[in-house]
Image (cartoon, rainbow, N blue to C red):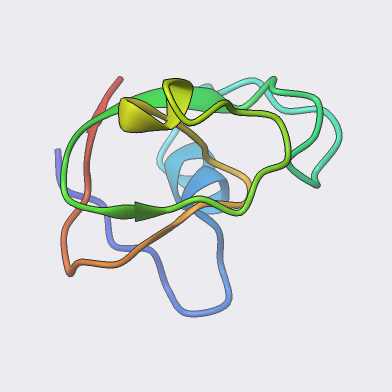
Length: 75
């Protein structure tokens, strides 16, 4: 499934708008609830919880963005 993330929305907003249940709690990238695995593309990490090793395959959907036109997630 391909989902566009409109400007001003988060990855989490777009996923939930398409019925994909991703847990969330704090809304600020500190609790870790909205973590998802990514497979391809380059995420922009804006969280305050993931270690450098975790960022190699995980992002926080509430605060992350994509540096590329396409970011593939493992949902």
